[in-house]
Length: 177
Image (tube, rainbow, N blue to C red):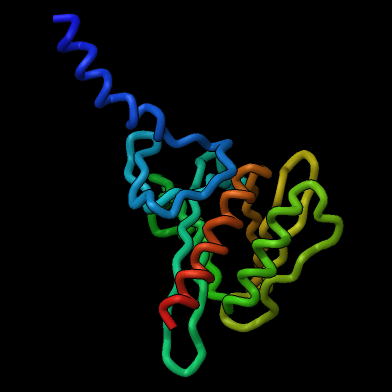
């Protein structure tokens, strides 16, 4: 019986070691799916909070390859809709050039050393997006569009992981071209 338990624990060990940690700074591109809080999440996400909500959301990063040089890196802030208002979208998304994604990744890894606002996008259908740092909130993505704004907060470790995801998508996009 002891041999059987040891044998079974040997196979369970790798899954225990791969448990998702919200403070992990390392992005792992080999992870296809992560189970967090009893729900499946795409890839190896970074956790965030949206201003005014207690629910934790998760990022998704990928890319869209298009002929003619209009390929983009896609960053989504995904939150489940609230039960009291299921039609209200709580997330946000960015579709940015690979060069903008690289610059954003560089700003994210600065963490607490990010001294001034980093502009990500100006105008257009996505609105204005900036990245700032506040000691009590962490790294803050701010979207302003149509007279409204949304702020998404990431811890420094989550921002570092997100930088890894952005860099991985840029590299994958360039390999695909």
